Figure 1 (cartoon, rainbow, N blue to C red):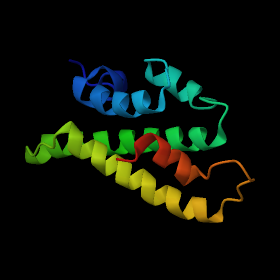
Figure 2: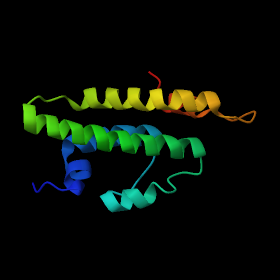
Figure 3: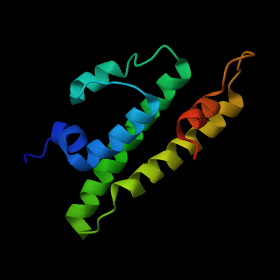
Figure 4: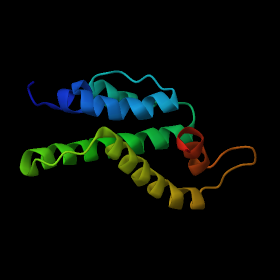
Length: 122
């Protein structure tokens, strides 16, 4: 396949498996095109916590899939999708923790970290 951002981040079965893991857990239905997803990320949900979480997930997926692509090309080392999923979960959770500590959460609402845990706790 031609290497382009559409293929690398959405059409490739490896990256699609990673992206769909997170999307399905959050019960979201984003568009399938790279540019369309960028527009969708402006307002993917009514919940502010979900908006932050999905934006962080998208950034982590793009970064770590690109890093994996380069590693495969230059060193021939290959990580399974499950390993990248675990790295993305750890990366996002570590970013959310300090944000949740500073977050002023009204009574009856979850913190951003509690929202994350509702989707991804084991």
